[in-house]
Image (cartoon, rainbow, N blue to C red; front, top):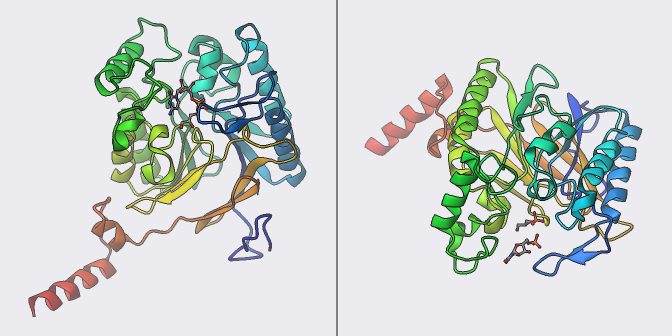
Length: 351
Ligand SMILES: Nc1ccn([C@@H]2O[C@H](COP(=O)(O)O)[C@@H](O)[C@H]2O)c(=O)n1
Ligand SMILES: O=P(O)(O)OC[C@H](O)CO
């Protein structure tokens, strides 16, 4: 079977367990085209057409059981008196999908509306909490993280999470303009105001959720607007405490794939524990006539992203040999075969 960008399915004929749609960084605004700070063109009105195309495509397939919006539905340049209507307009567009849409919040959503006004509009499982999990089938669980839990955007100015974020930014980023990475070196370049972090309570919840998933023998997909792996994104687009989140994830071996947005060019990496990180290409940066959306077919042994136009197709295997995990310092589970392998290795070394 051929895919739009030339990839070929490795096991034609095999039915997916389920399929879901993906899109990110729509960043709609009813304003003329513009550019990012670094000069990359942004098409604020066309992005809504990209979303409409995505929904049409998912609906036509009939096999897409739900969709993920990885965040940033409205752009920060949207005139503030239009913010509420713009958010409602994009959510209404998503509602044309014949299935459930799971939304995530992004920095641009929070430039437009405070959390107290934004969250109730997004049909989240709980109207006052932006992290949650769901199971489309008993064998799979999706964990949605709130990347702006600790953030200088969105909470009231005197909220403890704003205070924690401002203190961290002051400690880590000496620039007056806290969105500027000037002078920051290596991974420290992530300490920018347009990024955020996962707070202590959310980390505990993540740990408990992954423990539950492990007990239930579920495979897990973690979704977060801000990417979690330096290999899949630029240093300026990384979650502040990506390392703490990944430490929790690597404690278990149930997480197979992490999905993100935010870094508009997209990216893909496989970390030291075999977890795939796929940062999706932004709808906002599609010149008129092009698209960036996709759907993911979930099979027993892999997740297959079928992208359209600017969203690259990606094969993500979900099998990681236990011995490889042991060698990389990840969660260690020894099976009889691994023990024999280790025994032979020790005997060879002692010779
Ligand atoms: N190298 C950079 C990048 C960004 N900024 C600041 O961040 C703001 C948002 O950037 P966009 O890519 O979304 O346009 C931008 O307006 C700058 O204030 C920066 O200072 N240096
Ligand atoms: O959220 P934006 O549009 O400000 O973009 C953030 C950048 O991707 C970070 O490099």
